[in-house]
Length: 115
Length: 113
Image (cartoon, rainbow over all chains, first blue to last red; front, top):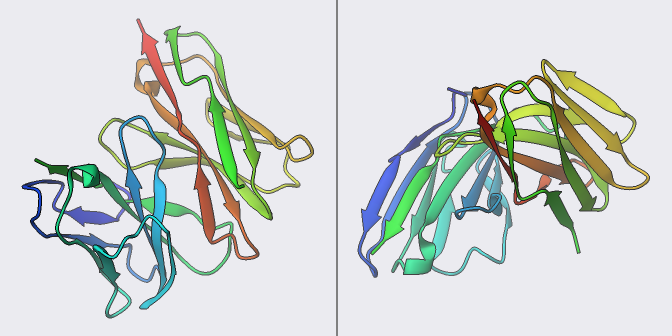
């Protein structure tokens, strides 16, 4: 257990439905990342927060995706009108401080299946 | 284009044997290189972090090497154990603050008794 938690761990939804995932980073970690990982692939960057500010978004993050970190603590990732191609593992990671050498701690992920 | 490539894609070894995984990258500006171990259905866990000035770093039976000139890294696992069965992912951090992370596709290692 790295100290980063994600909820739910698994989500099955029908195409067209909206889903929301939550990530609770390690306390006081100011940087928070969301990644998407499909089977047999490495994680792909989606978005990055420093405190409550969303500093960077990947082109992968279409208009159907939105992420928030309202108080600089937990974060949510919402997918609207889900498609089968959204089926993947969604990983959250947090880092303390601003040094590029600091450790990145990953949560266990949320496995999304869109039927 | 910033890319991280790993080889082999998968590997099967006998328990107790050693193995070496490879990582080549074309990421700029380079900040640091990390190796992660990811068990099936879990998030990645960090093994090593190296800057361009570090040639080698060990973490128990795991030893990572880095050649910043050729932009290559390797992860050597000695005396493999069944619990080493996992995916090993090479990650290169880029940018002035190292806030951008580029992931390889991983090497799937299976250790058999």
